[in-house]
Structures are given as structure tokens and as C-alpha cells.
Image (cartoon, rainbow, N blue to C red):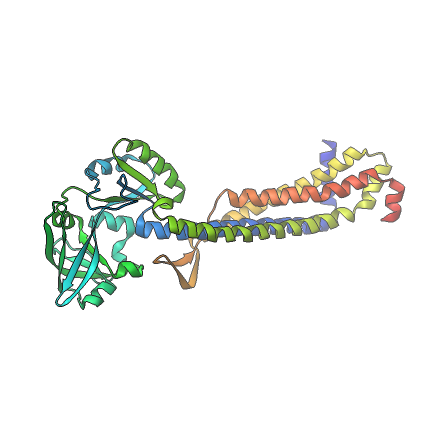
Length: 404
């Protein structure tokens, strides 16, 4: 207790030295906290935007569909699956989809298309698809129409209110063909999909391909990225034995996952550099503070202070100062990260990744952004002050006071 009181008084006695040393640790901590929160938030925002607006965080298919898609590999009872999804916690939205290929023609022009049957209301809640309509309107229950990718429409010389004919093969082996008016054009952000997208309301697609009551995919969005693994695990358990496969985005968007992992690896290199800068900043300040007090340590030893007590006093003194800076830095870092997590930084030139435009770079409040700077500042400060204090404790008082 005496050592603790002495360490505390030493901090108050040399206020200028304490302030400068504390500012060094505080700035280092806040810088590390902000950079980690910003880096994690930016990458997670890109991942969430890409998956949420296009593919979903989780997808459910018939076993084997992901590896080799087929018109016949269907989810035969999507209503039952939907009821299960409605009872699972941390699910934000879900949407069933039907896929097939076909040939569409308008006048003398024709092109191969990917037919995508969607539940118009659920798809809107899941991916905000209506925001991607660049001409015309989203689906209207009063009109039995289709939405074309904007480049597909240009290649067909077809516009809104024109009619197109779709030709394909139905699940029963018959010829699937129908004529639909074009109600809207869509910019998906994916050049390939813009050249081939042929969106139909789900019930029309099921009727066209003789797949009444069946779908190929159910896309699921979790409340946020942190719940994806938990939701996927519960769905796998609940759907076990049904012949359905539950996959998270890392599996069905594997190329995107690999690209993000590689890019994130570069970010971790930068993170290590930031941690080193913080450590060097703290090291330099603490080292100067300890070395300039060698005479003081010599006097303490001369009046009978034990070497162990001297080392403990210096360590406690540094730990108290580091702890205060960490607490204050945590408050500052929390509110900084909270602000950027909420509002982000608007980019002058939006970043496009995988067909999704990123207009804001957002931070994130997470545990890592606090514990890494805490370890860096605390360990660096204690290590730096330990060895000079140990040297002072071992030297002769007269020699130390004469030298310093």
C-alpha cells in the first residue's frame, strides 16, 4: 500500500512529465483503436453490402444444387422452410427464388437469358431490388410483366411497354413459352447479369416452367454479419434430414471470400505497422521519462529503499498512468468509432465491388479495437520502464547520483 501511495504521489509531483508521458500513451491508444475499428468496419461494410444486396448472407438449396445447378433440383416445400425461418432468431429477411435458362426474342432480335423468378414483396425486403430499376417500374400486381437487364433490353431493341417472347423447356419436358410486356429495366451492377437478367414474379415463373409450389433457392439475410454463423448453424440443425443444404456466403460466394481475405491480409500488415508505431511512440516517451529519473532512483536507494520495492514502485507508477490513459482513450475511441459506424465517411468517388456501389466507408465498434491497443500500450510501457528501473535498483547509489 505504501508503494502504491508513493507511486501515485510521484505522478502528481511531476505534472508536466506525467502529462507528456500520458499524452503519448493516450494518442497511441486512440490511434490504434480508431484504425482497427475503421479497418474492420470498412471491410465488413463491403461484405455486408455485397451479400445483402445481391446474394443474401445464407442460401438454402437442394443437396447438390450449388455444385451442379439443375432445373429439377428444387426445394419442394418452401412454405415449410419459410415457417422455420420465421421462428429462427436474428433473421432479418428471406426470399425464395427460381432459376432457369431460356431464349428471349423481341422482333428480329433474340438473346439467351437467365430467368429469375422472385417473390416480389420478399425480394424487395431482402435486397431492395426496386432501387435498381433505371427505367419503368417495379412489378405491379395488375400487370403480368417482366423486368429486363438494361443491356439485354438494349441488345433486343426492347423498351418499357414493348413485348418479349420467352422460349425454354419446362420441368415436365414440354415447351415453355409465353409473351410478356416489359414493365421495367434494371441495373444490377453486374455487367454479366445486366446482359442476361429476365426477372419474373415467382408465381409466373413457376407456371411457365411447371414448377408450381417449388423453388431452387431461398436467400436469407441475418440481422448483421456477426449472426451469420449462428443462424447458419441453427438452420443446419433445424433442416437436418430434409435433403436441403445450408451455405453461408463464404461457400456460395467463394471467389469473393478469397478476394476479401487476400485484401484483408494486406490490411493486417498495415495494422501491424500501426501497432509498431504506437509501441515505438510509447517506448520512446517512457524510456526518456525513466532514464531522466536515475538520480531520483539513486537517492531512494541511498535512503534504504530495497531494490525490489524500487522496481515495484516504477512498475506501479507506469501501470497507473497507462491504466488512466487506456480508460480515457477507450471513451474517446468508443465515441469516435461509434460516430463513424453510424454516419461513415462519404466517398467523393464511390467504390464498385462485384456490382455493388460502396458510397460510404464506415467504422465499427468491436472488442478487438480496444483489447489490441490496450495490450500494446500496457505491455510496451511496462517492458520499457522495467529494465531501466532494474538497472537503477542494481547500481550503487553514489555512482548513479554522480553519473546523472
